[in-house]
Amino acid sequence: MALEWVVLGYAAGAEAVMLLLLTLPGLDGLRRGMVSVVRSALKPMMSVVPFCLFLLMDIYWKYETRPTCDDEHACTPSEHLRHQKSIMKSQRNALLIAAALLLYWVLFSVTQLVVRLEQMQRRVDKLKKRDD
Image 1 (cartoon, rainbow, N blue to C red):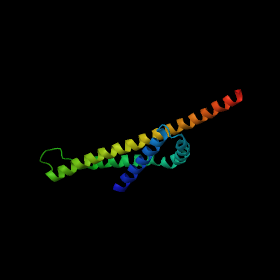
Image 2 (image 1 turned 30 degrees about the vertical axis):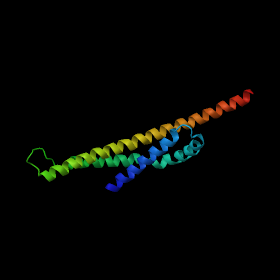
Image 3 (image 1 turned 180 degrees about the horizontal axis):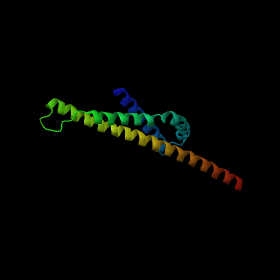
Image 4 (image 1 turned 60 degrees about the vertical axis):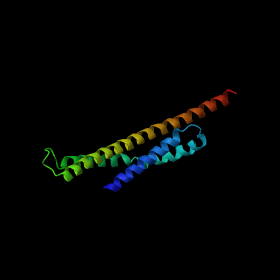
């Protein structure tokens, strides 16, 4: 199952890089090209959402079927350590899922705002030319 988490990590990283390039000031020439790249990449990247839901269900299933060490002497120290590591990995993976979903949503919203801003800028330029 480690490959799924690597793929999700790379997807979240790609989303973060695209978001950074869209929002950095002073990159107007690059931003126009990035908007078209991001808009064409948003639909395939939508597959992140069901993928995250699948991984979230996997975490839930592991949580429900995990061995419990409720009493102090019910588990050996190595079993207790493995149990604690499993809980920490699940928490880390849940944060990765949340970050990937949040970054996708923010990237989608920022892209829509940048497109709207460009459209309004073209309208303003068109109105200025018409008034002159």
